[in-house]
Amino acid sequence: MFMNDAIEKARKSAEMQAWIQAQLALKPGLISNANIVGLCNVHTMGIAPPKVELKDNTKAKPLILDEQGRTVDGNRNEIEPTHCMPTLKANIRAMKRGQYKQQLKEKPLEDMESNTYFDPQVARKTGIHTSTKLTLITPKELKEGEIPEIEWWDSNIIPNDLDLKDEMTSEKDEYFGITNLVEHPAQLSPPVDRDMPVTLAVYLTKKEQKTLQCRTRREAQKELQEKVRLGLMPPPEPKVRISSLMQVLGMEAVQDPTKVETHIQAQMNKGQKAQEEVNTARKLTAEQQNAKKVKKLKEDVSQGVHIAVYRVQNLSNPAKKFQN
Image (cartoon, rainbow, N blue to C red):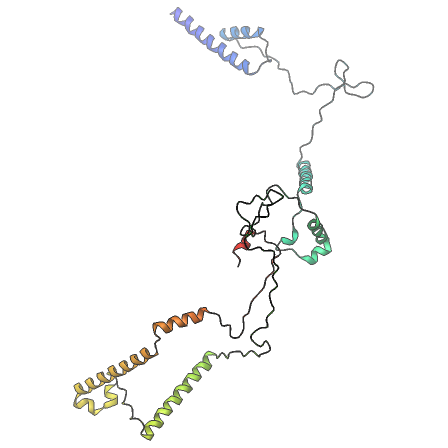
């Protein structure tokens, strides 16, 4: 039994000693190595450890000044004291303001005139207009690779196997579309008289078109009535439908309705057939339709040809290739 108690105490003592050494290893310099073993034995004996006074490293060192007012250490050597900078928000804002001004000085000036909200009148008053003009006059620095060996508008006339780096080119080099002749095109007078007055087409409104159609239909109807009155053509048959059978024929429809219905059906078929024949006669043939399409595509040069001439100052933009 006593042996078990001794073993238990030795085990607890070893654990306590290992814990103390681990804690002291994290804080070197607080306790000397000579007191470590003593402290461990005190813990194993069940006695409270003595209080150790720790040195306050955060305490300010005494200020020593010589006859000239310089800061010196214990050996009378001059030292440079460390100055603590305040960390107020006002000082931080001032420091950031200075950094921002420095960045504005280093940042290149932007082209204000390219801005959507640029006002030239305000720019002249504030002096921005003059500064932008000066930046335009300043020559631009060309970087390596900005100037191509051959421009895209010259690629169609310069041979592919021609070495452009050689200053002297052979006389045998032939350029497509380039000769030593100067073209002087003859000035021709326009085939159409330019002083001829241009007649504008008359466009009617919807109401005027409807009035004109009614007038034309009324005149055609009067012409038919005059022919019937003079006996040049038989009078037209009454227009009867199945729905208006009783109102138009009256007692005739009651006497023999089957005969009247057959007659009306034949009359309706006859009118429909006549309408189809008129539409077929008005319809264009395949050749006429093709000729009509070709006429729409071709330009009418009988009254002259209107053209537009554009002058391009700069062809460096590759999008100019596709703008015909």
